[in-house]
Image 1: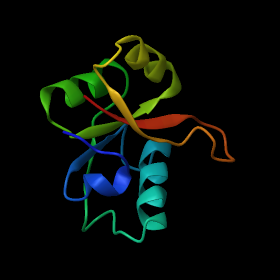
Image 2: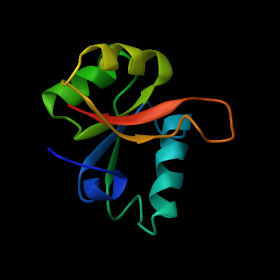
Image 3: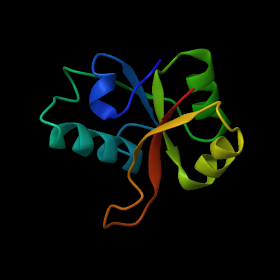
Image 4: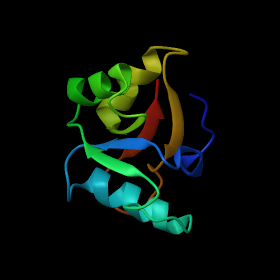
Length: 102
């Protein structure tokens, strides 16, 4: 799958760590900022963190996943295997996440 930004994932499944989590709130905020509806235009699915999220991305359970900072470092070591679609690390609140896909 090729995506250059969050809007390119319209109609797709996006993995979050869990409902109500920072990854959930961040992706829902970002979707709304793009004038889209997180409940109508995307499937937002709890997929865990770490190995759970990476497994969900790799297996196709989700088309892209919200990955925390420590997991981002791991993914970026796998040159060419994963793509950062959107980077939320510059948001003005604590927490770091990127939206990545295999």
